[in-house]
Length: 171
Image (cartoon, rainbow, N blue to C red; front, side, top):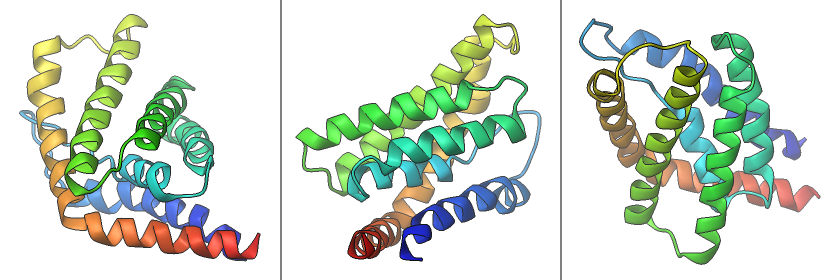
């Protein structure tokens, strides 16, 4: 039963990201703030979770994200997986605490947004300019997700560590 706790928590954040945060965020024509709470959770799992869980969750929830929210299957599954894997590899060589976690999370979100934007641009799904993408989507999203990360860093870190310990105890 304890083995299902981490996937259940990740799924809960998936639901929260797609419902609660969409209601809380104001929508206007000037900016688009994209919450990446699920992605931040995947980064925390990559840092402190079970060995390969973050990559497995990145693939799984990336496909779920693709099926529910996009017209092209595989873009988020690929993007989540590649960036989480790279984050996991970097974190193996560094002792990541608050400052580095914040910095690498912001870099990871930027990479995610640019990767998705590039793929969508290449296949013709989006036609906005790079400047419009930067001003309307990337900057507001970075600011919002940075604030969320800073506010919930300790809670998320402790939660992932505790759940990971519970999961490994049962194994």
